[in-house]
Image (cartoon, rainbow, N blue to C red; front, side, top):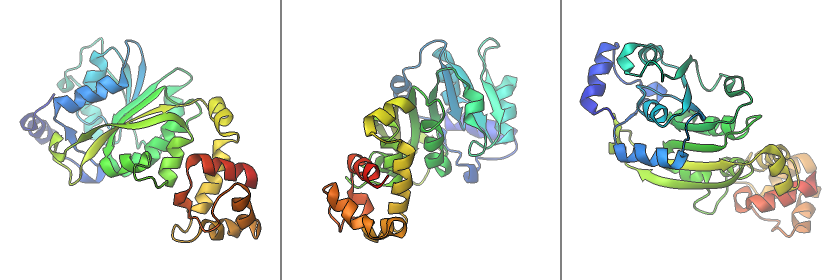
Amino acid sequence: MMPPSEIKQILSRWNGRANKALGQNFLVDPTVLKAILQSAHVQPGEHVLEVGPGLGVLTRALLDAGAQVTAIEQDRRFVEFLSGPDAGFASSRRPEVVHGDAAVVHWHTIVGDRPWKFVSNLPYSITSLALRKALWAPRPPEKLVVLVQREVAERAIAKDGKTSLLSLMVAFASSSARIVKRVPAGAFYPPPKVESAILEVIPQTWSDREVRWGVHPEKIMEWARLGFAHPRKLLASNLGLKTGERAISSLEEVGLNAKARAEDLSPEEWAMLARRLS
C-alpha cells in the first residue's frame, strides 16, 4: 500500500498530479484493500479485468493473490509506469496493460471466452457504463467487486426502495447485489468530495436470466427505459407513447396501480409488465 507521500513523489516524477477529469483518487487505506480482496475471493490462475489501475495498488494485490490481471488504463503516464520497472512488479507476475478508454474499448475482445472477474476502483464518471459493460457482456463475469461512489452503490441496490434504470439493470443481470463496506473520503489520495462504497454483484448467465424473469432482460429494459423517460410523469403516460390506450389496461391486468410511477415498480413487477406488453 502506497502512502500519500510516495504517491506524490511518483506523480512528480511522472509529469504532474492526479487527473481530476479521469477520476484519479488513489486508494491509501489497507483495510479497504483487504475488504475488496476478501469480497472478490480471487483464486490462483483466475483472470481479473481491472479498469483504472492508476499506480497499481489494487493490481499488485490481485497479482499477489495469484490472479492473471488485465488492466485498462486511459492515462498514458500510468500505462508507462505499470509497464516499467518503477511499478515494482516481479518479472514473472505482471499485469497486461491495455491503453485505452474503458468506455470505448470492447471488453469482450479482452476477456474472450475464459471465465473472469471484474475488480476495480472505478473512476466515478464511468461507473454506470462500467457496470453495464460487465454485467451485460456476452459472457458476464463470475463476480463483480467495485469501489464506487456511495450514492451510486445505494442506487444500484435500490436501498431506498425506489427502483431506477441502474438498479433494474443490476437486478435483471444478477442473483444478488450488496454493499460490502462504506468507505470514507480519507481512504483516498487526493480525497474525493463524497463517500464511496464497495459494491459486490453476483451476475447470472444469460440463460439463467431469461428463465428467472420469463422474458429476455433486454426486452424488460426496453420498456423500463421508456417508463423512465420522464420520471415525474405517471408510468402509464410514458408507456402510452408507444402503447396508446393499452398502457393503463396492461398495468391493471397485472395488478398494478394505474397511477404508479416507474420508480414504484419492483424488478418482478417490471418483468410481469414486460411479459404482458410484449
